[in-house]
Image 1 (tube, rainbow, N blue to C red):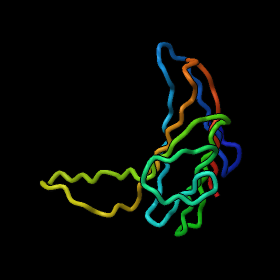
Image 2: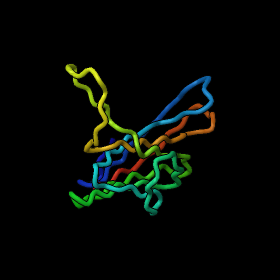
Image 3: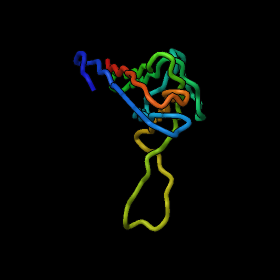
Image 4: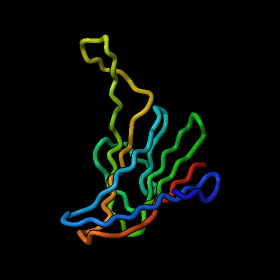
Length: 127
């Protein structure tokens, strides 16, 4: 990770693997209860996997912040926007439904088509 400024962070990756078909990296983005997602500049409300061409933005109306993850050029990505945190208490016997304060948008990025090695950068910005 390489901070560029107080609100921009470069996330570098390098890999060298053998005998695999594909290489993926997954990046979690926290989406608080009142926040919303934008994929490639368009509002996203769905709960299914969605393709991402260039960037994902989390807009938090309560804090007035925007977090933007920009993908490496040419990356193939999908986001699963509705992963929920687990609620664990040792003294409860039955699982309970509850409304969590946040959910996790899991960005899954395919890094190559079986080349086995490469590198690149993600850009994370918070405004």
